[in-house]
Image (cartoon, rainbow, N blue to C red):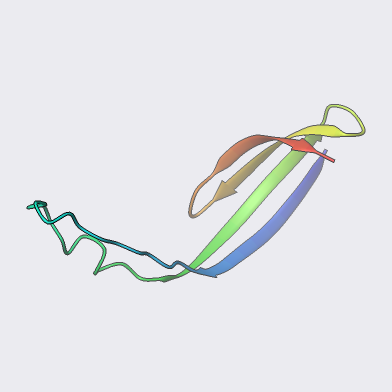
Length: 69
C-alpha cells in the first residue's frame, strides 16, 4: 500500500456554441475562472504486481479506480 500527496495546476479551455432557436442562458460559461489549482491525497492498494485499487481525494474531483501497471 502506498500513499501520496500531489497538486494539479491547469487551464481549462471551454468552447461553446448555441443553436439559432436556443433561448436558455447563453451567459452560463462566461463567469468561470479558467485557471485551477487542486490538491490531492491518495492511496493505492496493490492486488497483485500489475493491478491495484486507488483512491484519490481532491479539492476538485475525487476518484476511485483500478490501476494497471
